[in-house]
Amino acid sequence: ANILKREGITLIGPSAKVIKKMGDKIEAKKLAIDSGVSTVPGYMGTINSFEKAVEIAEEIGFPIIIKAAAGGGGRGMRVVHNAKEMEKAYASAKVEAENCFSDARVFIEKLIVAPRHIEIQVMADGHGNVIYLGERECSIQRRHQKVIEEAPSPFLDETTRQKMGEQSCALARAVDYQSAGTVEFIADADMNFYFLEMNTRLQVEHPVTELVTGQDLVELMIRVAAGEKLPLTQSDVTLTGWAMESRVYAEDPFRNFMPSTGRLERYAEPQGDGVRVDSGVYEGGEVSMFYDPMIAKLITYGDNRNQAVERMVEALDNYYIRGVNHNISFLNALM
Image (cartoon, rainbow, N blue to C red; front, top):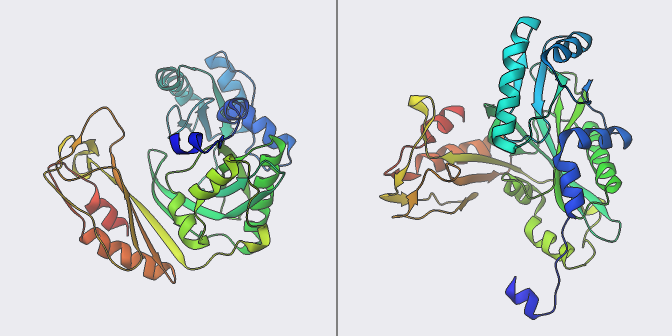
């Protein structure tokens, strides 16, 4: 930032107004509807009582899901299968929403059973150019939080990918978005897809997109923020190979994923063809209770999905962490 300032370069990212609007899931969904984006059936108004929640749920049809309007990371979400479960779920969702986001507002949507979680990476500049850089699938989750991400999705076909990408770009244009952003969807078994939210920032899982597109998303963000035009068009975007990402956490999968804290007595990251590690830790450093328990993002790339998975298994086997508990055995089992 100091170098850019010295060189007289001012960076401009998404406006605070856009970030606030898209960070509010109710407002974001209203904008999505206005932009012609497919959305999950649900109720977008304010819900002030348990009785009103039951009335809405019965009108939509169980099962439903209660979500925090200002939520994220699976916080303030409750799945409800019938009216008997509603009172407890409604009350606990509001309490968690208030505690996590200082905003107790919740809304209700129809629960899509056995969904696939698909997200589209968009990039937009200040000159009216908006493109999408393929998709990531993040369906392997625990407590609505992503564990494994990959690009491309093994589920989508090219026609659906294009539809999702075009709708994502339309939403970005509708709010005059600039920078990197992610439009998240869920898809059912018949490949019907529905808007979830838009993240007005770089995602944890952005490396898998970088590997399959060959684009440096951070560099593109900085260039856009400096007022440059995007150096590529939609026709320049190609997807080559396959990438997987595992989130390495300081938590114990044998004790219900209890967070682990302490000093990293030994820490060695795996290396090899197609292996990338994004981390913020080092041997001798401390994993404290005050931050997210993520130790690193482990990413592997291959010519196809099987090779990416095989490289991930080998990389997990060669990761060396001592001093804190970690979830590598769990990730290995998933692979």
